[in-house]
Image (cartoon, rainbow over the protein chains, first blue to last red):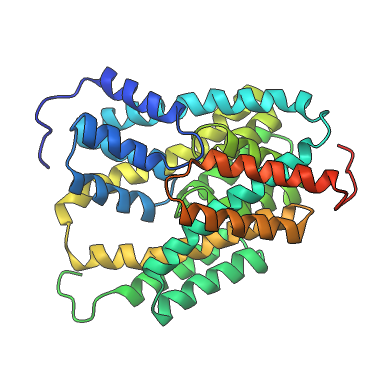
Length: 185
Length: 185
């Protein structure tokens, strides 16, 4: 693994990821992260960032926290990953609770639940868009399409528990994507 | 587990952390099942409010877990829930990131990426439908969600906050227009 040009101080990692986390309103954080870490700071190459992004998306965990771990690890190993994770979550942790604290007061305002339902509906729109982009990108063939549909029906419609579904569908799906006649398996 | 919420949160969230392929949205459906139906820690109404709060506040949507922990067991609950949801997945990401770059371009590498993508897509759509199901206003929620998804697709640079705000405004107007009875909090 190539080292970055200079050893990035841990406090810089903390500061950058704290800012990213605390200002990550409404999603699109990975774009913001790319802008700062690749564009402004030059901490890692574009290729390395995108490869980490793909990794962060296929592995379990939120994209934001996985990217913080990945970039932190590239810069300063395990310690860097820990600092970046802590920093990126710290702002949202307190802010989300601050907003929820106002909830008990806000609940008395007429129309509050409607507003919350409306926000939830719009946020579901973002989720649908993310799912659609993923489907267009990775589920064009019959097999992945069926896997995605099967997982959706099992979890979303039949409400089966996640663990057995993921543990069955995951390996089957990876096996189907496995290259035939591969030698480095 | 019902008697010790901290233990309960840990037992529910640690496995979810390791199964949250594609990030927070993929565990919303099973999370709702566990905390609303099985453990009965919060009501469906509270779940959808917390989901919206997590969307309005900065940070990943998975901060919903922080809010559930906070609701169930105060500050300790919030900390335990956050750690339980973010740390296991982050450790896995760290471990994989350390070996990942060494094997870039190998065929199994691609198979893993391609194989897990459809599972994530299925889980993301299941998460979307579970939120829609929780909201009382089915048809309007569907319309708003699809509309928000389309707007976000057509206007990629539009700040997501605008869409969330528009969703809230739409639902409040619909309530005032008498499309559904005012529900007392």
